Image (cartoon, rainbow, N blue to C red; front, side, top):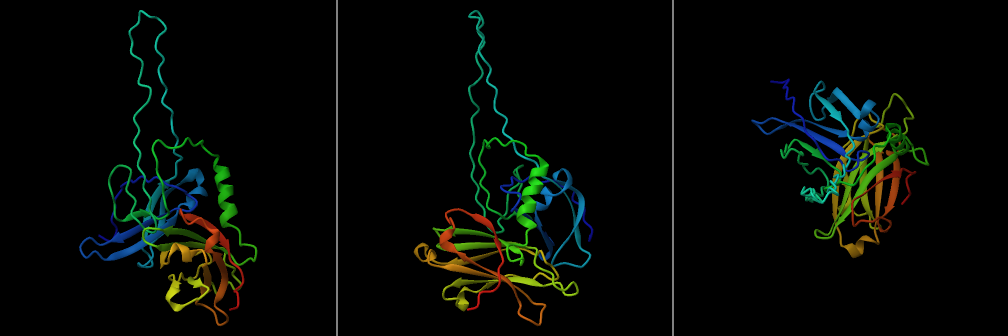
Length: 295
């Protein structure tokens, strides 16, 4: 059938709803061919009424123009309910045993990068669903008070609605260094608020990376191009084989370009000093795009 109905639910533990992304791939079981894919930024749920979407049609990429997936999602805040210990009776004639002082705990740590598959809480793993950003899960969870929805909305707006100091937009990146593999791992998440100078010519943005100071062809990395979009989402992961000692003397040149122009294709640029980042853990930040630095 070309209109399958599943009606199945999945639960994920989310580390940071402002930066995490849900990835969905539609695959033909017979041929194993990919029929379409979807990347949904969970930050959109923070702006939704009651933090949920109900039967929302979302367009699939790398598929037909009318291909959509119908999803219902709800974001909830995980709270730890402390165990209430029963007090023994003061009457010595009673022989009621006191309740156990604590409940045995289990600890599990999961660390994911890139487009790794995330297991569902019910123990069932679906290879078609994944959450991209790094996650650290511990049990019992830290006590989290329910934050007002308006506060979440305000925090999201402050990070995504800004066009940056130069008015050229912003780009969200994640950096991490793997000591075991001697690799710098970079995730290009998305770009927000690229300037639209001509409404009849919406940019087709893509991102290009170089390691400085050499800026050699071997360090060139490039994302896919997103057509007609001032707020493109990529969620693409790139790696560089580089020693930890060499890492602190390097910079990363991040350039946003467009394929749709007869002038300079550069829309903005940011130079990231890798020595300024804490690469012992996954670090996700928004960077303001600035005018291109002439070589």
